[in-house]
Length: 237
Image 1 (spheres, one colour):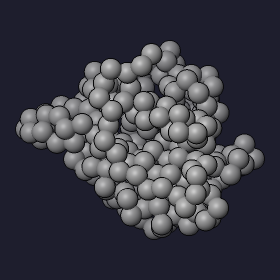
Image 2 (spheres, helix red, strand yellow):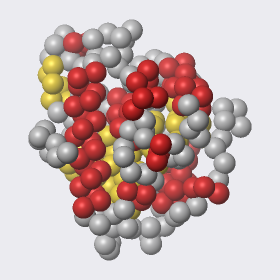
Image 3 (tube, rainbow, N blue to C red):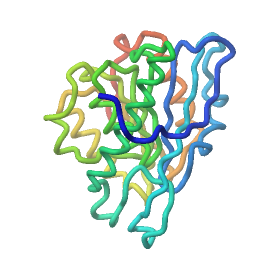
Image 4 (cartoon, helix red, strand yellow):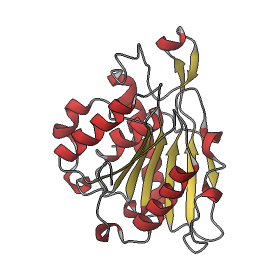
C-alpha cells in the first residue's frame, strides 16, 4: 500500500559512481538529518563500495518530555519511565521510514544491500522498522538505542528478516538511554531468534572512535555479501 504520509526530507551523500548500496541513517531526539553527515568518511569503507548515505529529518512534533515544545522527534516521549509507548507516533514514523527504504529500492538498490542505522531514538526506529520490513534488508545498526513496542514484535516481525544482521552498541555510562535498556533489548531479540552483535564501551550517550570503526567493519561485512559467514558476538567477547 502506498503511504499517504508526507515524504521525509533528507540530506544525502552520493558515492562516486552509481550507488550499489544504501544506508538510511536516523538521528536522535531533537537533532536532524545533518547530525551524522560527518560520519561516512570516518567509517573506513573501501572506495569501490559505492554507498549512498541518506539522512532523513524526523517530523517536528510536540514532545511531552520537553514541556510540549516542538522539536524533531520520531515519536513523543511522555516520560523516561514510559519511553517508547507513543504507538501512534512510532507506527507513523515507521511507515515513513519504510517509504524511504522502498525509494532506495526504486532507485536501483536491492533491499538486501540497504542498511537501516540510527542513534538513540533513531536506533529505536531502526530496530522497530527493520524487523518488520517485508523484504530482506542488509542489516540494522542500533547505537545507544532500544526496541519500542517489543511486545508486538512476535506478531508483526517478518520471517524474511529473522536472520538479519544486527549491530547494537551502547555506552556503559549512558544516562539518557540506560545501558540496561539496550542490554535488555539484545536479550529480547536473541530470545526471539535474532543474531545480535553487541559491543559496549566506557562512554556516556555518545559515539566513540572504537564504535565508528566497528560500524565500518559491520557495514563492510554486510554490504560485501559476507554477513552469513560471520558469527554474532555476545556481550563480553
